[in-house]
Amino acid sequence: MRIVEPPVVASVMAIAAHPDDIESWCAGTLARFIDVGATARLLLVTSGDLGSNDPHATQAGVAAQREAETQQAAMALGLSEVIFLRHPDGNVENTQALRGELVAWIRRWQPQALFTHDPEHPLPPYIAHRDHRIVGRAALDAVYPLARDRLAFAEQLQAGLMPHVVQEVWLFASSLADAYVDITTGFERKLAARLAHVSQTPDPVALVENWRRRVAEIGEPAGLALAEAFTILTLDM
Image (cartoon, rainbow, N blue to C red; front, side):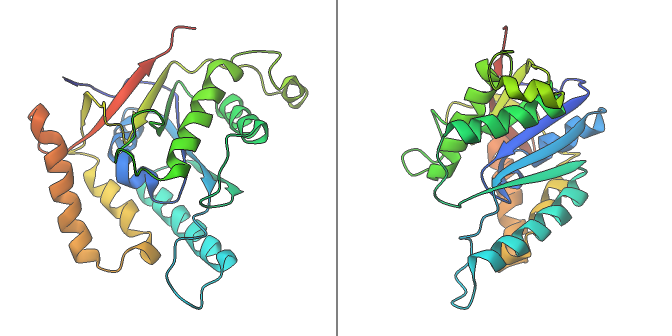
C-alpha cells in the first residue's frame, strides 16, 4: 500500500467504456493531474445507449442525451476534449478495428499517463460489466505493443500519427489496487461531473451522501480522508 502524487506530465488520457465510468473511479485523480499542469482528455468507447429504463426511450435518444451530459461533466472536471467511438453498449469486442481506433487516439494525444479499466482483476469480481473488461484489455493491447510499434497500423503514419510510448497505465476499478491518491482537492469536481449525468441520477441527494462515504472508505486503509485507488503499471519499453 502506498500513497502516490500525480506526476507532472503534459498529457493524460482516459479510455473508458461508458459515460460516468471515469466519474465513478478516477475523476478526482484526473482533477489532481490537471491541477499540476496536465492536459486531460477522455476517449469513450460507447455512448451508454442501453442506459435507460424509460419504456419510451430509444437507443439513439439515450446516446444523444448521455453524450450531452458527458460534455457537461467534462467541463465541470476540466477535461480538454472528449471523443465518442460509438461502439454498441453491452456488445463491445476487442477487435482489430477497435484496437486501431485506440492506437490512433493514443498516437494523436500522446499521453504520458493513461487511465483505463483493470481487465484482469476487475471490481466487482466476477460480475464486472463485460464492456469494462473488454475495453480495459483492448486499451492495454493498444498501449503495448501496438501504439509503440511503427509497423502496427502503419497506415496511420500517413496521417501524421507517429508511434508513441505511454509511460504509465493507471488501472481503475481494480481489485488489486495498492496505490492511493488523496482527492480532497479534486472531490468536488468529481462530484459535480457525476451529477452532470442527470439521466443516471434519480436521487442527487442520496448520490452525494453515498459518494462521500465511498471515497472515505477507499481512503481509510491509507489514512486518507478522501481517496481513489489504482493498480499502476510502469512501462519500460
